Image (cartoon, rainbow, N blue to C red; front, side, top):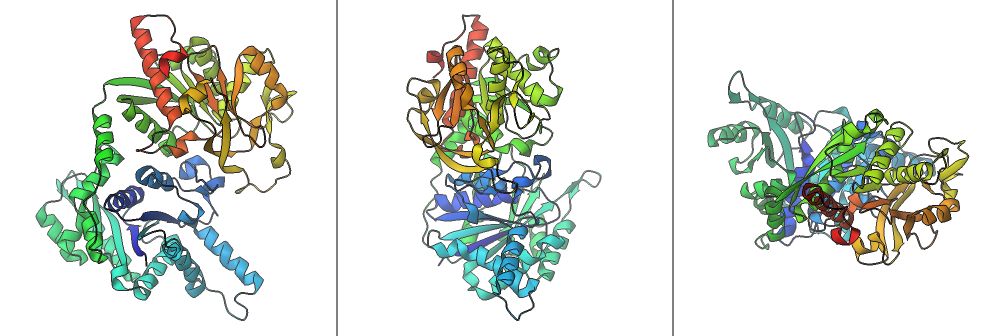
Length: 549
């Protein structure tokens, strides 16, 4: 039987429950445990697929096409395993299931209530992965903050599971904040005491406290927290601010978080952690030998979580290239023909980010033109690829009114058009082309040199596609479709044959980049930018594709 670890949060949001959960999972995995993590979110949306990135950050897509919380990206990047639909559950999905059952007559004659019907469905989802037989330990992160009305059914479900399961089968970790008051020049434990008391009032008592702090927790302070929160002193864990999230697993290992959990779960058969690859990655990350400046052209740059997977993919690719990747955010809405050179000067590469809607599109097209004409390494993802297609159609093929029907439904030249199977769809949630699809890559292309194989499988999240009616014109002019879906002939990859590094992909490669397996497209892009810097500094002739792969 699997054992269960529940991670709750108190005092304030954004303390890093996902990172703590992923770090603990990494340590347990390194000790030989089969581990998975799941996220329970308290909002009523069925999933985050219809949310604006400003509301909830990026929408992370799994292999099986689930639109999920961005924390699942952390889980995959840390554990180097795939998550699925079962790893992310929302209040909306729980209520939808219960209401559907009620309509079907499953509760015939009964009054449907939060307790037991909603909590029973929550418990069923919490135990689902553990009952699969694939995992030794299931870590469940409870979204929101203790005390929120929305979180109460999840906390109640945890209380019931603590009562129903054997004592050695559950552990509750409470992540809290120990703020430092500059005026008083001391750390304050009262917010943590109140948070634990609030959790205890709901019937759930934490076994371990993980305390986020800017200053070191001395032994006296730990003793005070343990005494007033009724936990063992060894179970008061310091979670100091770290330069990078990838240092947190090692910090938690020093605090013995994994050992304490294993002890509480009565697991005695475990090995010393194997973290050599992780430490090697951190060494390269901390001591780079070079630096590049990458322009991230997007329209949600005010919120970094909107492009979380892209930023982390740059970290992975930078480390393997022993290069510090400095991401320069450039808001596409404020790029025009007059200021483009000024805004993009000093950059060594350009990534045009994904997105939806017409806002900021013109700036992305202008940025693509700049990269194409200046020989600047270019990488376009999803909408970024589509903008590259539109720019090429307008400025190389001379099709001045070329556009996407997403932004201009009446364009006479829809070089990007709504997919045929999408034209009859009216429901927005969960109806895009989602999940993993194969892509066959043309031998001899830049993409084939990067991947070194064909076919490849990549994750998608889109409704619009390259219009194949224009493909011949594009390829004759130098923009080739080097990757296609074998079943539908959908263009997955475009690249310029007369440019040092210019590639756009319809899929989202950032979603599959992990610490142990950086995505080859990001790795090659960073390598190309390094070569660009070297060429620029040496004032040599433009680089060739053969020199950067």
